[in-house]
Image (cartoon, rainbow, N blue to C red):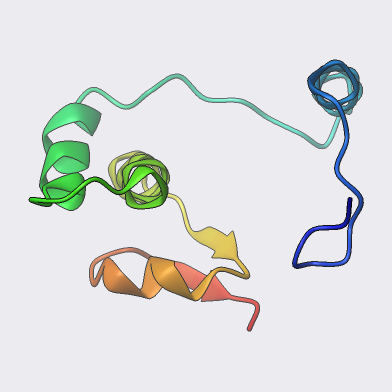
Length: 90
C-alpha cells in the first residue's frame, strides 16, 4: 500500500531496523528532551477536540523550540506554530 507521498508502507519491524541503521550513522545525533518541553507542548496541543496529528506535531515543534533547533519538514501544518524556526520543504 502506497502513502500519499508515493512511498510503500513498511512493517513496524522494518521501521525499527531502519531506525537502528540510522542511529549508527556518524552524521546523526540525538538529544534528550529539553527541560521546559512539557509546558510548551501543552500550549501547542491545547485543543478542545481530538487531534492525534496535532498532538505529535505539537511535540516535535515544542522540542525544536525548547532545544533551540530548526525544524525541517515538508508538512505545512508546522506553520501553525508561529515561534517555531521552520525550514519548509514545500
